[in-house]
Length: 468
Image 1 (cartoon, rainbow, N blue to C red):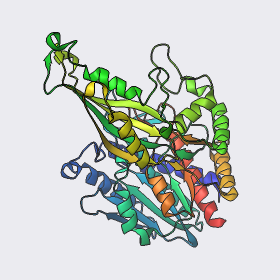
Image 2: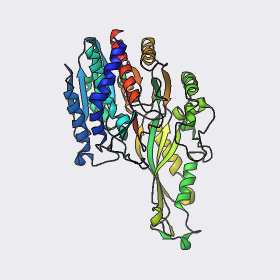
Image 3: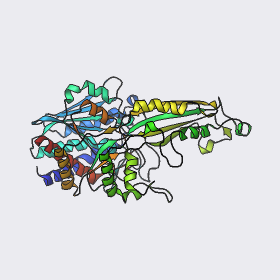
């Protein structure tokens, strides 16, 4: 394999064949079903799938089979297969559904508007994770240019990942024979600590998304009449959340939400923390004089990747400021995201959390907990020495720096499901979501040099895997 020829081809292919189509994809508002329940009627998801499939077909890769599957009532899935010359299977995973718009986009930017500024391509879904299908095709094209023998490659692009991948198990079952038994899985939907080296994800946190509601009245009442007599639903909500989270430190206190951290992951956290020590001070747009919650970079890595954390992501029952009258409101509902340790039993967590938050509420008010999403975490199997050396070599060749292993604070529900389905497989989980790329938030961007180097790196890994 000619590494420099691979990098040169991939770079030109990204610039001349990918960017225009990827930009058009960014401008399709194909939000995930959780955020657009009427996605089928609106047609944006089907438009995005058709757009990417059309582009793939125009690349005319010899022998590549491209199919769109759609089970009744489920989002569509793209399945591609290249038979290859080596009797082995590599599975490449990505998704193309998107998070909602969010607020705070800079002037000239918008969620469903593709804008290139230097090395950055802005817009929702470019980095998370629309680039994956394009990168996978670029890998095959680059390797094909050199006529290299490849293992069988299956590419699976789903459309429900941002909703917790509820549709994916159905497709994995329906397409089991077509997918086969991959010995290597490449997932391109993860993070990177910087843009200077290859980052490998060794764990993913689980996630529980829920809505906690507190009702104190059947209807709103004048606050001057009811204040001091009727409890505040917001105050009760705060009390209930304090059962879960220390309001001063943010520590998640219940024992059922804490799991032991393996020694190998502590060692990785120390190495990754040393690389990221300075980055932690600038990686996020901190407001005021704030900054990271700790001065210890190892602790920050572990808090983000192995400890539980809570964020309130939405509030209902509270009017906006222009409509905030002097009323004691009848209810408050908080939507929250609870990140869980990678090895948590999410079903058990859901049961115990419901008991914790709804039993014996203050003042006997009405409390309910609705769980919207349960996503299992993932802890990678031990990496085979051959694969580890291949990844190190790819990072050194194309990034000019060593590869770094680290846990990811986010969730890819598909990973544990796949690990259970193909327990013999090795996993390479990586991605382009680096500093300030801001997936799910405003000003999401794809760092193009990283996408190019990652594409070349994974092409090398695929070829090496076939040669082993």
